[in-house]
Image (tube, rainbow, N blue to C red; front, top):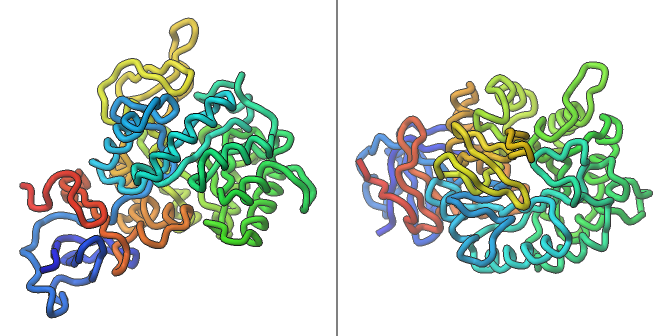
Length: 411
């Protein structure tokens, strides 16, 4: 007998107020109005008063549950961080590293590749080391390097096919300045099957536009590229601010996203961006060009206190993570402490329709991964589901048809 879940169902086409999801084994078999559940699947269960979402997809996460991917020493550390987010609705998670010496990046990448082989994470994201020291944020500028295609190839080899994306600053020499057929970091990334992402950059609008055009063309002509569009790492954060006489990378990224040539990450956790910013960007470029991310670090799901993000000390006070300076004073925001479902709740609270918020937290990021089996409640996809209260608090989470947290009929 297949499992039938009934409630408010969020699909790529919209919200079915009284809908049903039929699960057979590890796959979604049918989705639609509850009074149209096809014969042979049995009567739909009684209405639960719950909301049913697809499993969420986080492209940018540094950790949680007290464990961070940049500091992980073994698979247990990786699993601890990933499970924190899995229990709260993120069924597909990319593990993010921060700028570090090459030998550290290679070791951590190899560990995360083991975790990807084990199904704990969906891939690896490197945030650096080819970034702008002027926009370092919560990254160590002393470990930032000029563009080095050979290091990209070494990281890709350590990742064993699991390198999903790398954040790069286009103005850094060697990143995106080669002739059309020349060698630079973005060409090496695309050749390795990874998606370049613009971020931590002080570039002009013109330099950003040129880099995005180069990456878009490389992805379009690369055999087996996982995605057709590059991304922008946490738009606005770690970038030269938008100014009417100096539009910088933000304007270039918004224009590219609106044209269907870029996906912009938004850390819409109530700390990194104002609600009006989130609503305006989503209305401007559409949910198909927005990937909601957490940028979460080890403190996600944990109380205020002292943590680390790679080599940097971080203090979390009133739910906001900041670096700690040599004088003990708080510095830059150091990632997030939210789960992706929290981000969806904030986005809906900012005035974005529920279906668009879920699309940006599941369907669009799945396209960046090149995954057609996750990210939406669609027949044939993996049965990743999140059951929530009406105000989007987690009740139960299923991954591949198996409940991994809570129970769908919990009061």
